[in-house]
Image (tube, rainbow, N blue to C red; front, side, top):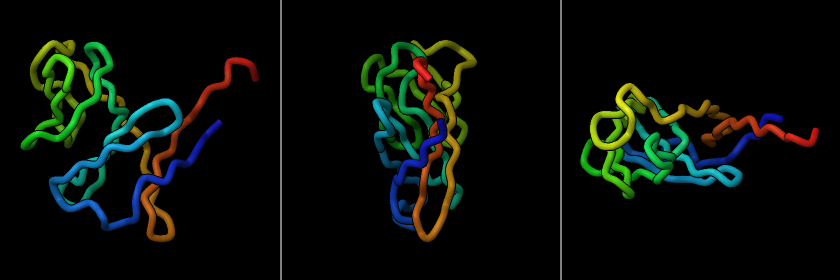
Length: 108
C-alpha cells in the first residue's frame, strides 16, 4: 500500500540544507541539491544509525560513516563500500513536498 507523507512546504529548505522527518516507524532525510530535492531513508547502511548534515556530508551519529547528500553514496567509514542510503520518491503538489512510501502489510 502506497502512503503519501507530508514533509514540508515547497521552498522552505534552502540550497545545501537538510531536514529530517519521520514516515511511519522509519526516519527520512531530505536535502536541497542546488534546487533539486533528494530524499533518503535515514538509516546508515552499517547498523541503521541516523545521519545529519555536517558540512557537505551526511554523517552517521553512531559510527561516523559519511554519505554524499546528492547521491546517497557511502563516502567513508564503517558502512559497506558501494552502499547507498535508500532513496525515497518525492512528489510536489499544491505547494507542499511529499514523500511516497510503500508499506507492505504481511497480514494482507
